[in-house]
Image 1 (cartoon, rainbow, N blue to C red):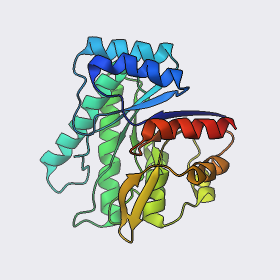
Image 2: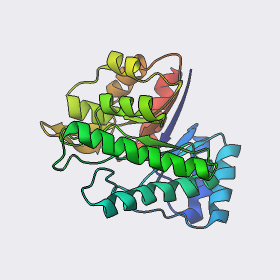
Image 3: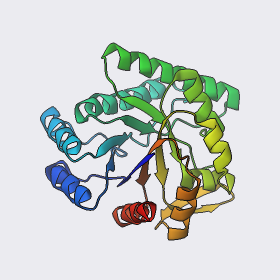
Image 4: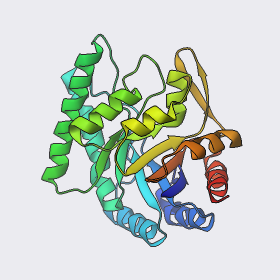
Length: 256
């Protein structure tokens, strides 16, 4: 079992390689590049340099796609735009040598759960066809979501993995906010692949689910690390407001 810890952010292109060096010195071996407000690495030469630096430092890169994605919109144009945003991330992600593109799958709108599931599943299959056409190695990873009225329960994401062979992102803070508890046994039984991509942080939530992330309490780190499967390679991306120090806390706790 290997766990890679790291923050959900790399910062501007001009300081990216320096930032990776800083993460390396702290012992962090993962970093998720936040394209949440748009793909900001445009130049392939920059992406190549960042990717090579990450590989040299044994830092596993991933990408978080833009927030404005809905693979279940009633408007076909919005679904196509969403697919393009994910594919744009995949294109630059391939140059970066990133493993996965994490994305928020979509909303129910006026549709029922089953119809929403089928629409999102079909969109994922179409995106994967494009990925295959380009011979890209990168995988796409729908994320478990933290609001109760949004598509993205652990069961729904696990079913997508099973039926499309996509990757996945288990966001433990979102699971807690959505379900008011984390059933680790159920999660271990649902997600069979040998490699897990996860998000983790402290979180404030209400009856409707997620409100906002907070600094990760050390007892929450302990609970997570005690309950993770012992036979998998796991990447844990921290999304708290203090994500670098929180990632270091998690690493220290894991090393004991």
